[in-house]
Length: 222
Image (cartoon, rainbow, N blue to C red; front, side, top):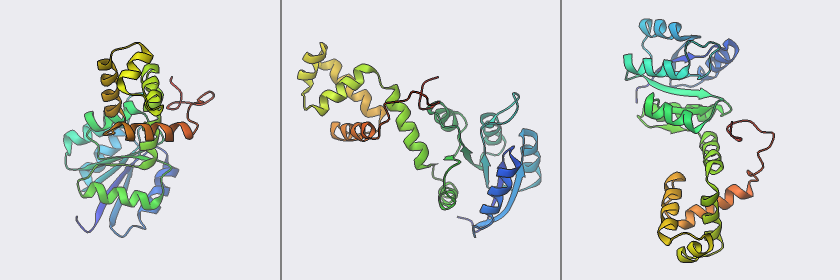
C-alpha cells in the first residue's frame, strides 16, 4: 500500500465534511484531503488533483443526482479510484446497487467510529471490500423481516427439532419443498447448515427485532 493517501470527501453538509476532514487529518497514512459538495464539484476536483479514495454520501438536496450517479460516473472515468460510501441510509436495495452496479469499495454507517474509518481505508487501499458491522447487522435484520411466513415456520420447526419429513407433514408440503426452503434460507442468510441458520434466528429473536411498529425503514417496510 502506498504510504500517503489523497482523499476527496463528497458531502453537501459542510459541517459534517469539515468535521470528517479534521478527523482524517489525524491519520498518519493520509496526505491531502479535498472537499466537494456536489456532482460537478466532484468532477472538477478530480480533474485538478490525484485522488486515491472518495468518501461519498448517498443523499443530496437535489433531484438531479445522487450518490449512486456520482459513484457510477467516477468509476466510469476513474476506475482505479476507491469509493467508500458513508451514509445514514442503509438498505439491502442500496447494498445491491452500490456493489453490483456502482462497483463501490466500502459501505459505511455515519455512526461508525474513527478507528473503524481508518480500518476501512486500509482495507480498500489493499483492494478489499469493506462493509462495517453496523450495516451488516442492519442488512441482516432487514433480511429476517423479509423472510416469508412459510420460511419462518420452517426455521421454527428446525428449532423444535423436527426432521424434514416431520416438517413436511406439519406444514402439509412435500419434503422436497422443505429442502428448497432451507436451501434458500442458507443462501439468504449466508450460512452453511441448519445449525448456523437456527443460531442466527435465535439471536435475532432474542434481540426483540419482531416489534417494528413505530419504526422507520429499513426496520419497517415502506
